[in-house]
Image (cartoon, rainbow, N blue to C red; front, side, top):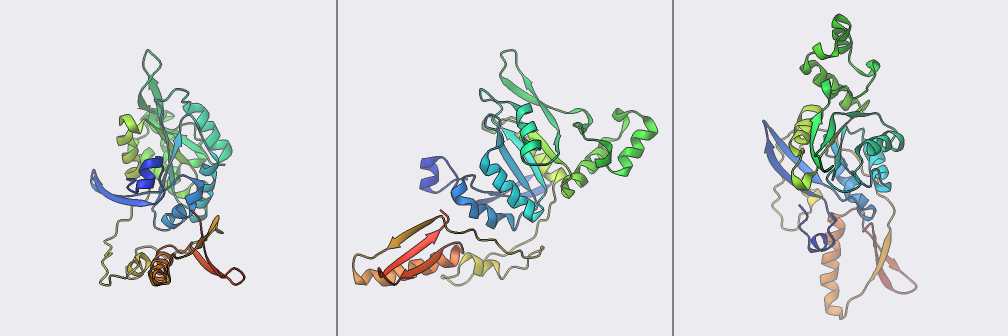
Length: 289
């Protein structure tokens, strides 16, 4: 989904991008956000319209510093989350260590739904769903129906799968557990179970939104302000700028074009700040990357 030249050259996501695609009986609306700290405001803007988030971790690196920051952003929005431990095919991948880091660093209760299966040469081959999906979660975190079903039979294998799935979904939406899945997306291993988990375990609210605008000078937020959203509008906490640049024109005739360009930028990106230095007579533009 990275389409900007700078994104392709650097191999990172700079600007959030959205794509819609069908999966099973659902329409998936995916927003890909940057993972680099310099572009964290893109994450903040995207979180306002999400039903849930898939937090992708590197199976080698585990929980990184920016992971903690994004996790806190999602905490403030009370977003349901699923963790996908990616790159299990890389040398040094350690699923168990990553799950331990998730619990200790992110201060949450991971619910392991899959375990890795390795070939005879110790290379990651596929994943296997955990038996009944319990993943070591104690009974207080299950619904009363699941507890009663277990007490009736005293055999976890006899609890209906639909009842367990419903219980996991409720716990995920409440944030009391975080489902954890794994795979190797570059090799298309276990991506499909992840999509199933998104539709089965997270909140799905698909509205019919009209983004059309008649004016050529309309900004994104002008169009979105006309949309009747199915969720309440939430404000954005704009972080302080991390850089400041000086803007100058080569000739006086270019000043008008610069003013128009700045007007469009400021309307599109509320994190940008324009100021004027009285002492130097310079125009300063500050932002978050």
